[in-house]
Length: 409
DNA sequence: AAGTCGGGGAA
DNA sequence: TTCCCAGACTT
Image (cartoon, rainbow, N blue to C red; front, side, top):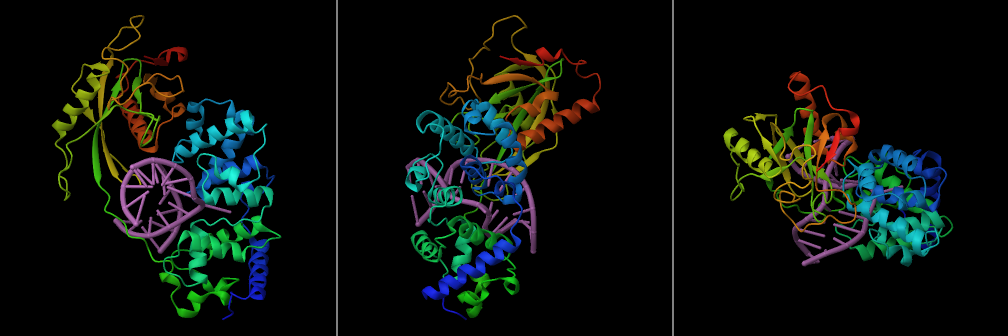
């Protein structure tokens, strides 16, 4: 095994890594026609998200928002709708905010200085280093999860500290090609030096790998400990009026899925002290759904349960029990615009939604749910609603004129 | 140092 | 199921 500590060995390591990268790098869309804007968009999307997952979102985003100017001119609702399904929605808000900063304070150009980048919301050490090196050719390291694993194995360190990783990455970095070097390290981690079943036989830098020599590759880096994930359950009211419209409410501007839309829901009995929470009784779910529905609308049928929708978040596992509730707005068409009880979300959190100008609740035709910023679990409930309507021809009207299909209350 | 913040691919 | 992904931010 060669010792990577020697400067001459470091140079040899760079050559081997970059030659392998040049010979077979993946054809990812953000690697063509690079601009600072496109690099920034890709790096935001790639935070904690696999490259293959990002590809279709990135391509659609660039068609919708091709430059800083178009993004800065968009509303937050438009931005959230484009980001819908990608998760970690604070990234979308931070990118939007950065676009307006670039337009209003930077004269339309992203600063190349890593420290200036680092000061932008949503830009940490990794993203600042990645954008500075890839978009501007500045010789700074960028240590993501892939590079962390590659370095932990190269150096055979079980639990490397962020400072140590940054130091080692800076030492190995190719000052002539910093962006390519950083990408090559990540690419190695994503393709060969994988968390499980790494393909060391194909690795271009295996002869510098201390973990390979020590036989500890699969134990580097050490897995981090994880807490058990609590389970939560919700009764979800899927209201349907005679015109085929359903009610959506907007979530509070802070916390989980901030400012996204959802079907009105209420948490079911806090499952107690762990253990296998018993499946809630059907009647209790329907009663809870009717209760939350009554805050927004009048339901005039008993309620028809749909199959439960399960969804795993990072730190909790949710089960939604959707209940179809034929009903309608409390106010008649042409009547008062504000519902009794005021425009409150179910949780009744601190109101006035920030900035979007959208009302906190809206009746939406079931065929147009795709146009709303619904998180994945809520999209699934929307599909269940559409299937229910298809099964029950005549249960709702033929549908209103399109111009009235979305009625905000 | 630990918790919050989504969703999906792969074994 | 479990792990973790081209992380950042708050407490």
